[in-house]
Image (cartoon, rainbow, N blue to C red; front, side):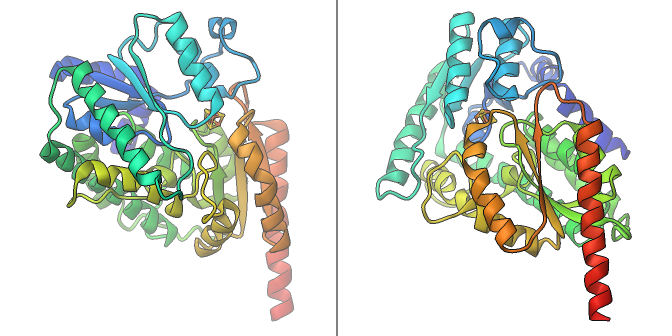
Length: 389
Ligand code: SF4
């Protein structure tokens, strides 16, 4: 693996170590947030390091005394880490809610760690009401005020605009890698792509930008056009990064991931924030608008259907099928999946549902199903080629 990818993989695998090293080097504060909708730009503008808290691979033990076993792996893991004092490196946790389970996890952390500052901001779930943007704006105002009080700093418009520009650059750099991978001019496995995106959620953004620029440069000409492998689109897995063993297994089965809408993937970088206007209003618009670029099942938006969007996205990527990775007990995903299944089936596009869980081992049954899926697409494609000859 390229040395920069190794560096990013190490940061992604050890958020606590990465954040502690940053603290030691800068003397700054760290604000942890839950995934999906939190505007980390505001934390950066306050001079702190924003870190999106990650599920880890450790068995969940003492945390099970505080959270139901039928909650998703992300929330169970977070509570487990908190009660084991493994999140003590963060100076505060601030988050926007996006589902009942994440709210319950936050409540449990509050109960079990009363000394920890846990601030909660309810961003409006309904995105297309006349008042949605103003409502989001007023929540963001409260959030930035609380950040200022918690960190004892002032967030100026200029500092917020500069942070937005820095984050935009990061999103653009990663999207550029996505585009180059899609067209086959560089080689990046889905596991490596995850290292890139996940490390961006943890590392200092300016440092990350410099590493991605160097990496992009070094990867030029590495593409092999994926000869002989089946292009697939990867969807789902909202808050938690898919286990790298699962990503590796998919590619070992003869597929290659040409594109995705994973949160630890395209979803995270899908949309820039306007860095020329009032920065808080721009963040409120970003929150509303990015549902067009990657519809989210935790939000209510009657004008953008995730299933139709996925069908188009997977077709535009050149994928010959889609693998849906669904985290066990993820209610928003459970709710939307039947529509996705129906849309893909009625349009004759192959798709495979793989349910994952915190305790999952990527072997046996799952491998066989992915192998069969890839083989089925291969045969279908050979058949249609023979028919058209
Ligand atoms: S959206 Fe799904 S993965 Fe995220 S916290 Fe809720 S249930 Fe868990």
